[in-house]
Length: 248
Image 1: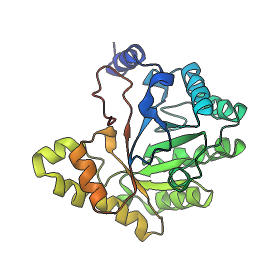
Image 2 (image 1 turned 90 degrees about the vertical axis):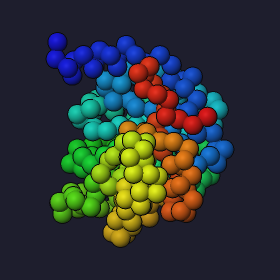
Image 3 (image 1 turned 180 degrees about the vertical axis):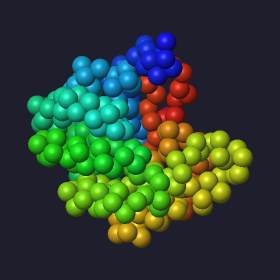
Image 4 (image 1 turned 45 degrees about the vertical axis):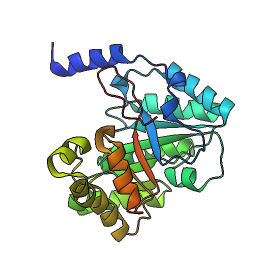
């Protein structure tokens, strides 16, 4: 069996915490600085039924359900994305960006986030998002080395109301880099420059998402102590083989 199929089977079978019980994926307006989203790409093992049940929880409790997609149309089909968007609309849940979460007011909602650097596919999903009046938060890595046309697509997404945030210079596995080079090097070489390069092009940038969701409390404190961002984003655990990256 091909490796990618093996991985797909592992992911489908490994999800062991129902989304509606995965507390880390919900923001309860408690002003915590480290948030956790849950991956909902096709192979992540989270069914549409679980996502809808998670939305029901958010509506009932007044929380924000934070959902992560990587490449709409590739890692997640547009039909599946549309099912998620429709589920939120049917429940009258607004789509909140990270900026709206940080600035309030508090309300039940759904926050959809795109990670990495696939700007073409992100733009291709704009019509689907617009149909549901949905804005997403884009956590962007490798921005400094993007081609001009890719940066133009980022600007187009921002002009349409999508939120632009930082996701690392080289998309490094943070704890591994810290072990080898120290936490100061990670902050100064991976996190802060990815924030600064976006700000240099006019984006506000209020938050930083850890690549792969890999973090430690030491890294959290080091980044937040710089005052460069108000929020960090990791991932809620969904697979048995992944260590829980969400702080408790």
